[in-house]
Image (cartoon, rainbow, N blue to C red; front, side):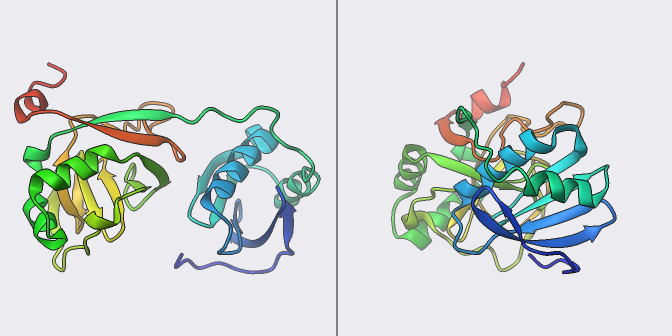
Length: 232
């Protein structure tokens, strides 16, 4: 994470993790975990922080090994509440959200390139992609962009040397060993293998995302005709 941050605060022991604390602003904190902490622990800690702080938070943003907290109270109050919550554990695990996303591979701008890079046919790329289950590990880059792991290593493909200036919303791509969804139209350098007709981000809704961090994502193939008539 390339971010300006000021280290003035002591370690925070929370949810059996030693977090470095960084002040990002007057009402924002960054909790950074050691790099060997699994992302499941990050997600679990973020959910636990929500339950501990409740209305004290205005927003919470988990990442690969850190959690950003945006709050409306004194920093000391936030730290004290987290420090004294060390022994708290969730009585019931939160069910994992499972999401099926329709995908049209006929709109895959780079499907042929991914197949050539992988040394397999386009049909094999589609079969491999459809048969895997993915996990949303981060939402960022642009509002609603979904980073996911779980990509079969055979489909790993470097990002494009020259990013496109414009990609349609719902474009589904591969960047290195990850896969992701452009929930909004934007520039992008990932290899696009398909597109979904779903609007996964809507700032007018609460929550604005249809897919939350930690969700399990699977794909269901649709034709171009089904894509074009979706929602009509």
